[in-house]
Length: 115
Image (cartoon, rainbow, N blue to C red; front, side, top):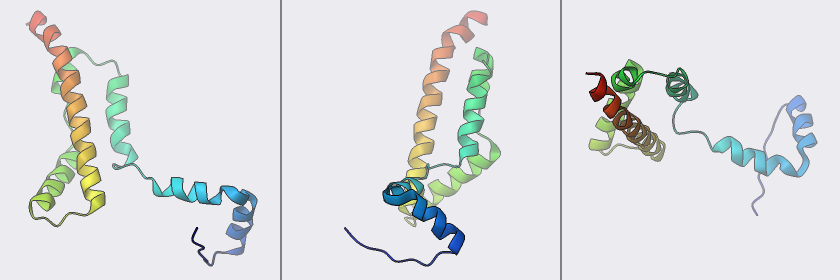
């Protein structure tokens, strides 16, 4: 196991000492950030929790910010100037898009029946 030495303020040092042998676990957890900012997940979850109608589900779209970021990621991917974090972010957008397509396709029978 590697040993790392860092300099931290005294107040932080006291807090870290209280963690004891849990510090490596907490450091590892802090490095496992979600691929997308939390507000993007909140946007989607808030929409789903609002009990949307089939028509609202069919009309659901990403925000302008999400669309812009996705275009940036796709452009960087095509230009091959992509970081691993950006690849993970693009992969997460693709997973979300796939789930939304599945949700929307489940709503199609309801939309056809009401037309």
